[in-house]
Image 1 (tube, helix red, strand yellow):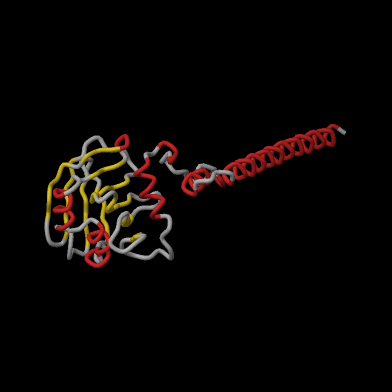
Image 2 (image 1 turned 90 degrees about the vertical axis):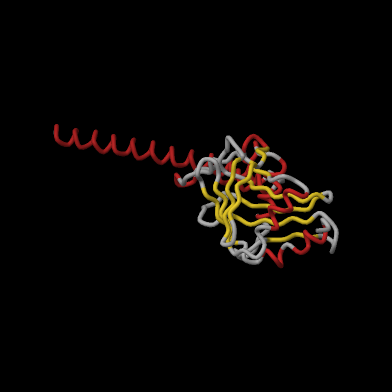
Length: 216
C-alpha cells in the first residue's frame, strides 16, 4: 500500500513538472509569435530585419548592432547592400541617370558573418565620398590602406558615434580612390588592428558611373 502510494505521488510530481514545462513552452511560443507580429509592422526593411534578428528563436545568437541607433549614412550603406541579389561579387552600383548623381557603390567585407562592414563609394550632390559602415565602434580614424599595388596611411574622419569611417571629401578623397584603381583586393587596417578586406577586382569598370557623375 505504501509502495503504491509512493508511486502515485511520483507520477503526480512528474505530471505536474511536464505540465509546467508545457505551459512555459506555450508561453514562449506565444511571446515569439507576438514579437514576430510586431516586427512585421515595421515599415523599414532594415529595421524589420533587425527586429527579427533580436528574437532569440531556438537560443540562436543575436546581433550586437542596434540598427535603430545608427546614423543616416550607416543605414544608407546597409540598406543599399541589402538590395544585392544572389550573393553577387564586386561592387553593387546604383545610378539613376547616366552622368548625374546620386551614384552609390557598396561592397561587404569578406570573411564576416552578417552584419558585415560595408565599403561605400558615392557621388552625392557632386561630392565624392569614400566611407565604411562599421559593426564595431572605433575610437580613432587612423587607417592603413593596402592593395596588391600600393600601401597608404591615412587619417579618416569618425562619424556617427564611431560607427562610420569617412575619407576626406573632394580632391584628397578622389586621390585616395584613384590609388585603388586596377587593384584586385583592398585591405583596410583599422586603429584597433582589425583588418577589413574587400574584393575590388572590378572597380575600374564599376566606378565609371560615379566618375562621370562627379566629373573626374
